[in-house]
View 1 (cartoon, one colour):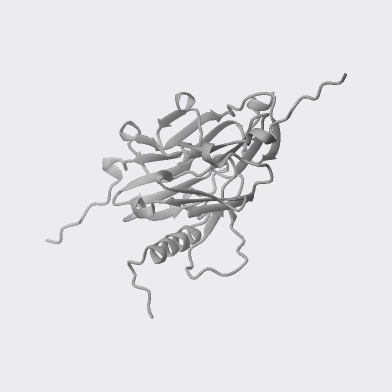
View 2 (view 1 turned 60 degrees about the horizontal axis):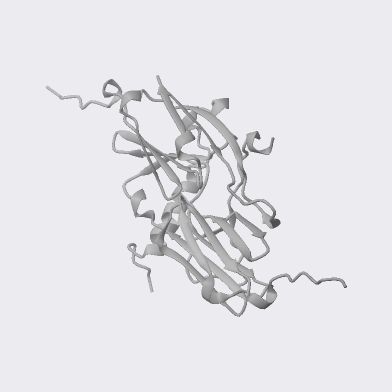
Length: 132
Length: 141
């Protein structure tokens, strides 16, 4: 029963940059699931602490780029005494190989989980070929 | 040019550094139940009280159980996928399953006064320090 298995901690991974950023703060790679159905590609990403206002999703030249910023002002006046993880903004880019109907992409953010539904373009949907 | 202290990135960098410096500090006194299990927890001091912050994106809120007794806090629940069937997975990085974690904090807390808030996938537990445990100013006569 996969749903009953015990959860283990996944250490957050930092974004490996091709070049150095001009700012010292660290970005993290959100844990992502991608699955494909007949009519759409769905990307599910964990971005705890990111709100709708601070989430950006871009699709340019088959590059799907997601950036989520956390509001760390709530940490003001708090002194860490014991920590097990670090916090930071999230960033990740995917190359989309399928033809996607760009006008119909939908994004939903709930409880720190971003769900992107990328519908396939009509001509890319699988066609059953009849054998005569 | 010096970056002003109020620069948002500098502020985040300072926060990240201070979080690193307290990484697995001995504040929880290495109690075995408190380490190496899910979910990871950060504990902060704010004034006399404590705040525990836990990242639990997509947790089933109705199944999230928080119990406090003495100086123990127990957190249990489940993260379950709600994906449709008949799909092919391209990438599978998220983890699903149940968790049950108990931490014992090395201070006297007021278990009845604990407040929990879940927002944007982040759980915050506001843990008040017990009144008798708070430091008192000693008056010099």
